[in-house]
Length: 338
Image 1 (cartoon, helix red, strand yellow):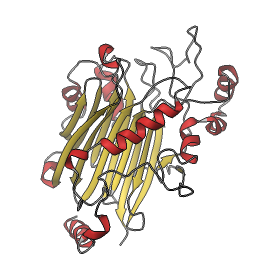
Image 2 (cartoon, rainbow, N blue to C red; image 1 turned 90 degrees about the horizontal axis):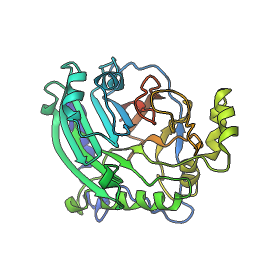
Image 3 (cartoon, rainbow, N blue to C red; image 1 turned 90 degrees about the vertical axis):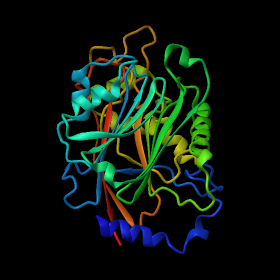
Image 4 (cartoon, rainbow, N blue to C red; image 1 turned 120 degrees about the vertical axis):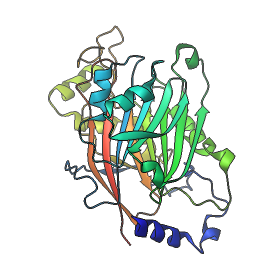
């Protein structure tokens, strides 16, 4: 790994002018006709962590609906601990000391490296014991997108951690965007404001961009153009992949509004919202909401010719019932290719 870090450092030398005047985070504003949309990536479902990779991370996002049990957190972090980093993004988190509860759930295999908290929006990065020796930089930031959600601890906005770990410059962002199917443009605008604002106080014209940027959270994009009962019928018949053509997030990215050049695993799991609390039954309230993939994990590699990413899984954690959302988990490994 020392050689890998040396190679990454050497690759950046003599090229400072290339990055001059660029923001720390990638901008979502793209020239007309330049957008790529979101690249959908298949998961190989073979989590052979670290054997053929330079860095492996497990990423989890969960809207907790203000509830938590220790048993749920044990299920959340899973039993496979061979990853280098565990990144946990929480929305509508309760007031409990979740860092301590997560640390207890990790059974001494990992330690807390960094956290970013803005009321009910919380982000934690854990690494193996003594992994703080591999940290060369760690910064945190947050950005609120307003509203009165903080009164009921349902903060909207984003918190982020920027970390240089084993030579990889990474940014992790967990967000909670505006709700309701009609607010597509508002969510798009919030994504752009978050992207432009995070870490702006650390702005340096000579700063090199992150190798890896990961967004996770309750992005709140919904299914559009289909009513709830036809959608549920497809889900019941295990035909929910057909619903991705109705997904607002993929549609808006295709229009070039957001997440240009990002990758996301293919949505093979069922929509993660909205469930009746305590069950795996979709909403039976008077609103009978259309099930949607509100909870997502997306990632972007700054230089895919030099860093190869392999998605090993992208799944919902269906055995957690305390929230009206199901958590989502991704395992991603990275390898330097030259």
